[in-house]
Image (cartoon, rainbow, N blue to C red):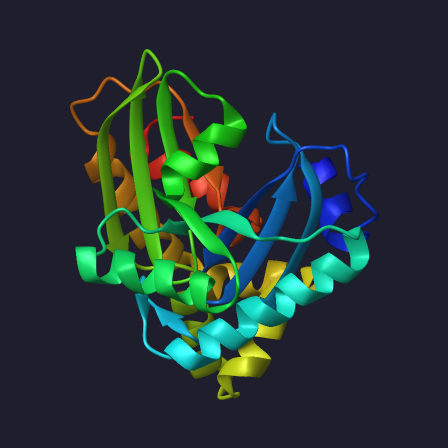
Length: 243
């Protein structure tokens, strides 16, 4: 995680001899482009807040292309490498048409799409988990992948994520959505905001609880931006009964 954060804050030149992989995540809140080495270790990354995807559906196609194109250009300038090929992630439950839309977005931005991968599988590629549950709490949805002996045996995705927290904050404080987003991400607000967003976090945990029921899961791994909100791990354990 620290390596990924460093890649995001300080993208550096990548030697021409270093083989690279490129991944694009069109999130409900943030669009991210990541460059890794062959082993999947982050080398460079760039992200930006962009309202171009909602619950896994690309609703602003042109805007999404422009965002990815801008991030691609920024990373190419920082790393000295051309980002010509890459994969794109999608929530597990999106339709075939939405698969194509994600692919067409990155191809329209100048990245030849080599693979379309669901978000929880992509997260586990980095984590390398063989048993348990990987929970990806994104901006608009919560995805859960159940793993047994390294194989995904169940994969679900339901609405409710970080955007819903922001909407609750905006309503509670009567502030614009953009200001609520900033407040949600500010550590100095977290203690005050936890009681406000707790019902939404409990809903996320309930989604996870239903997903893991009957699968003999003994550990839950949280990923995604909302997973960083203080208190969510305890709420998840309280409701699911799984650490």
